[in-house]
Each structure stands twice: as structure tokens, then as C-alpha cells.
Length: 92
Image (cartoon, rainbow, N blue to C red; front, side, top):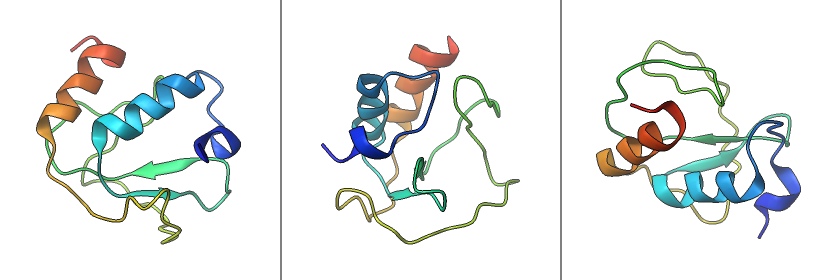
């Protein structure tokens, strides 16, 4: 899987990153640095966070690259996926 080559998160394991990508199942692109990912999914997260990875709502600026990761070029509504991420990583 391509994600093993580009993920630069020092906190999450590769398996955790793959789980997040698959759980979100939404628009995912490779970051400008080439070592990270931006995942965009429609829904509501109860808070902003930077630990163990950054989650931002509509008050954040991001440089988009358009470099689609693994054919995940469709923005999706996925509240269930957001909730699962909140439970697993943020204990919400």
C-alpha cells in the first residue's frame, strides 16, 4: 500500500493511519511536503485537536495539493467514521 511510503506521523503506526484512511473513506490527498496526508470528510467533530494528529473544522487554512491518494478523490459525508475516530483516538 502506498501509505507505507509517505506517512510521516511519528505518533501513529502505519496500521493506525491505514485504519483512519479507510474509516474516513473520503477525499484524501498527499500533503505539500509529500510525507503526510490531508483527509477531508463532512461531519461534525466535537473539538479541534493536534494530538495525536490534527483535526480542524472550518476555521483552518490548508494548502491543497490535488495530489489524490489511492483514488480517494470524492468528498463524503461520514459522521459514523468521524465518531469512530473520536472514540478510538480522542476518547470522546
